[in-house]
Image (cartoon, one colour):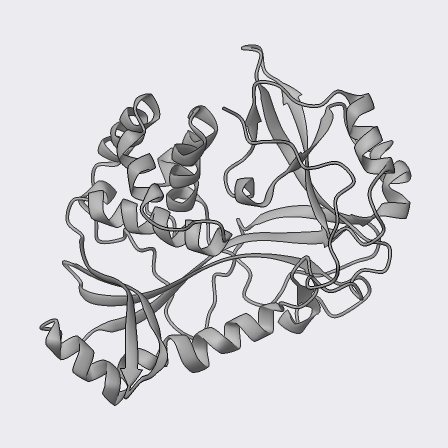
Length: 327
């Protein structure tokens, strides 16, 4: 499912955070290999597939001067990670040779009521495609049937993999075939299309207890661990060398790269002062490269001791704010 297998190491080689994220969304594997609706990489029809060096050159140029990407991202709110993910894909489609972006976030309405939106309408040599995008992070419950997607929860415990898949297959993807969509599509000159999805993200496995992978998982899916706060000392002493750092939510995509990070003492102070009501925190273990920067080796969700009983809409507080993203 990755049309660019020779470029998978590229996101770690880039320096600019937004460009690293752009490379990551294009080059990372999907979460699942088997889905009820077709799953298709949005750039499968791009000329870049036949010339991956051209894609690498494009990303390297952006890394040296990211002004066009920065300007694109500044046009719309990207405070939510899902919106940021969509904006990155829109930028990629607009710059990919052989692919045309027809519309993004096309609203489908009946009267004054909005039924939903089509994330992307694009066209390539294989036809017109309605593509639904999603970026998700799910944690597998301990001592459950991990093959069941109902046992994979978001870090706030409200979202579930089975619910997301049901929403995609029962609402988001079929909507492009409804009568109201046909009218909106006809106005764009579209008589037929293919409805497809692309689901990116990470699966986090419990440090203690088994959690088999969900049914249909991609063999190369991105993965991490999760651990309750009370178990952190026992967990940390068993991990290899490195320093731990907190990732703010907008930095959850590409592998982390920092010039400066907290010291061990600063990290331990932050951990000890966490309020019991603080939501799950995404941590990364980093190692220093020969060039002097710190690079992510693994990522781990540190969850409240009552998780998954603590919901994301609870009173969330920080004793010490998460670190700012790298310059």
